[in-house]
Image (cartoon, rainbow, N blue to C red; front, side):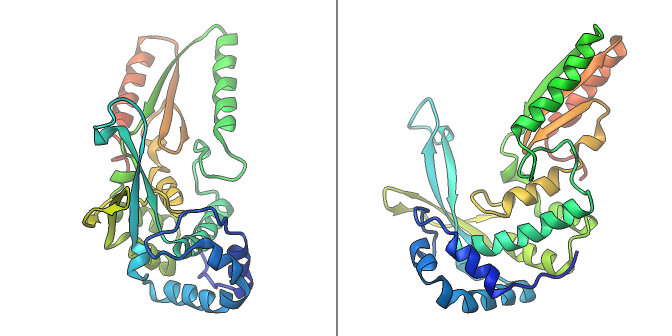
Length: 273
């Protein structure tokens, strides 16, 4: 993977494409301001971005998140029934877009990502995942074969990714030293505070996981979970942290093997550790 060189033209294009309805991050820089001043500030922003990549460092505001709890279901008084939405710096998201685009280009050019992963990828979606598994299952059923299917959803998968293992996997995938250093800085010394009705909690350290609400987080998660299917012999299809495991059952041994594979996958994201 080649080193990244930030262009003023590219940064200006990103600034002009900002949606002004997006919420501000901890740095309180509104997207409307960035968009309206795109031409004037693009040279300075591009210089800051390039310096951040070259030095492998980020401002503290770029490593801070405001957590807004969104109610999901059941008891409104239980914190477990709220989904945490992370609001981060918009400027940092623009730089993340540059980083993630280069990483994904490297992955695609070298065919690194598993063909079984259908999330956060160009020409892939939940529809392509559904079509692929339905086609396989239908072919087996046409041959009057039994297909057993098991569906898993890894609990708090994004929040429990160990940073050192993630960086090790990125290294084996050929990500450049420059980008690895930047990702290390991006994941290190992060803090988050919960904001409710204008009140803010004391900041807490984030010691694991990929930042949700960020642009780069999903790409890092794909890299981390990429080899999960290598440990099992049954069929596996993934959409981010949602996983379907299936197997044609010809005899009792196939049932035992499927159960063994489910147990392996059930251990969570420790595969490859």
